[in-house]
Amino acid sequence: MSKQGTLNLIGMLLLPAGAMAGARLATSSGVWVAYGDTYIMIAVLNSVISVPAAIISGFLLRRSTGLLARWLAITPTIVPAVYGTVWYLWRGLFPAEVAAGAEYIAAPQYLLIGMLVITLLVLLLRVTGLAPRSA
Image 1 (cartoon, rainbow, N blue to C red):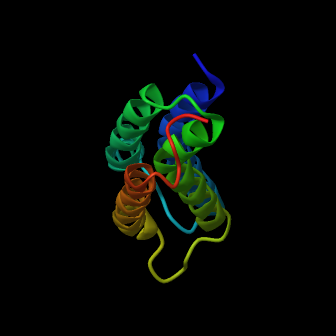
Image 2: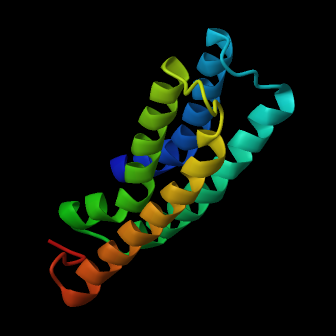
């Protein structure tokens, strides 16, 4: 497996793991209490974003031979995973006092839209030839 393929799999697992770690941090600070079922729901909600993104990136990786094309192919997985994980960990360290835990319902919606926009941009770059499949 290539370096980008490994990063694709890591990105697929990073978002649900980061969301659960953020929920654990928020629970330990005492502002919000997450139960066992809450962790399962958070993992499933974030897997709805990361698994399709990893599948799309996997299909794009199969057709990519150049280094730039391979890095571009994994952006639909990596960008939402890193951004979402940083957001969840930040909100875990500094949770909102008014509506603590609301970001675990709202953030996946925004991450899904971001993943779709990034996927469309990558496909547009590949179709127009601005980012060729081979170097």
